[in-house]
Length: 288
Image (cartoon, rainbow, N blue to C red):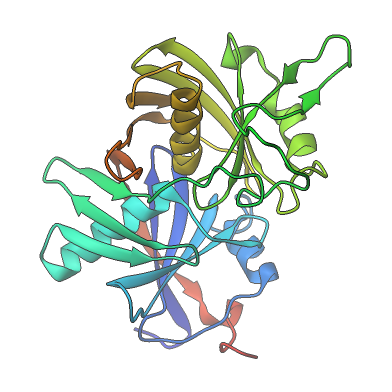
């Protein structure tokens, strides 16, 4: 391979797409500007998140994650499924582990193209999410969008599943102008680390429909952690059972909040779109 070129894989989980770089043997650093250039859908490769695979002393691989705006984040459920599939193929076994900035995730890659990720236990206390002020009950927090006397959205649940989420339960997720409301709520002072903003509709005790505005990425076809957070929020409000299908614009995920240990399991597909190379000039040595 030409040293001036760096191989990448373009992958997606239910349309939530990623550029995946392998940094396990070739150390490099990425500036926010470089991430934005790669993620740009007109001038670059185009993606919601950029993923770098790095060595790990705790797991089979370390997964570093940047959103399309260049900001680094700690979790991405759909990307974890894609990375798990790559590592499982390399290792020749279905069970692998992935270290992130937030946790070590266990994964099982099925022969049917489905991957289950153990996302760990959700964080539900106000200071763990985090929120800027105390709330005794994060199943419903005081937040609204729209006029005070007739809010468009109000009283969301707040959950952290590796990153902060606010989930508004509505009668029709498609009736909400999330492209307009999402950016305002993402940057609301109540969320010191910003937040992913979702609207969720209960279709049945076993089925949710969810749309998400992802912090740093905008509207995406699917957000794995939002699906997990929405399921946890619905279960806490006793709107569903502990295992639900979550329908996202890009397809379905199965989410189970396991009663025994409190861990959230996410099951869904992955896909390899294509492979290519990037100019190494976009990158700089780590620490420079």
